[in-house]
Length: 313
Image (cartoon, rainbow, N blue to C red):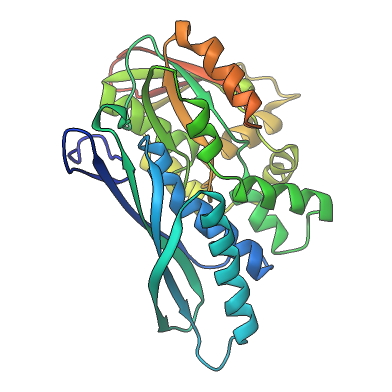
């Protein structure tokens, strides 16, 4: 696979029956609990393999931490969180590497496998519907959590969502003809959906009110608690996103906050799945059985000028 569609991982065809998938990702702590941070970082690293239609099998730890400044029990908790999440995925950690650094960071290099015919590209076709498998808004929520603006229940829901493996969405796609798939991470929903539209030379009609967003994220966005990455994501897609939104002064602030959530960078976000309408009922049923979100948030249409995405109410 080439670089044309900004795919999520490297794919190497080993034989007619086996394709190898390689990916790597790591980042600094986004939650306070080290064990939960390990789980979230591992789930995020594993996600690219699922987005490509494969199953993770081997993983290697990538860890940086300030030597003699970060307690070893914290380091141990991070690694245990990652190991438990990798085991949940049915994969095995086979080693890794650590270095002394002023800021702790953790993630994985992951190897997975798939049949070459099952590989999914980060693309979409005209006529596809777009399905999302997790709520968005975690970048805003982690920002709010840093200043203690979340309740314990809101924080727990945010963490559980990020730690939830995309394995279950991948399993739900079995038996369904899927045209394309990607996971939502640092470029936010808009950025990653735009990549799919660009790769397929189509335009996505995105219906903002159908996107599942954490209510607290919308509330925080109205207060201006938005990570800097959301503004960078908006700049990144400037000129290829058109808004067709009914402006109502009574709800304009809420609408703008919802749009900010669409640009919000996600850590270990859900999958975006492009699928034909005839395949949709089975996919929705199987996603529901696996505990995933089942929202249809848009449709890919014939290319409209320079626009990759049209945002509608």
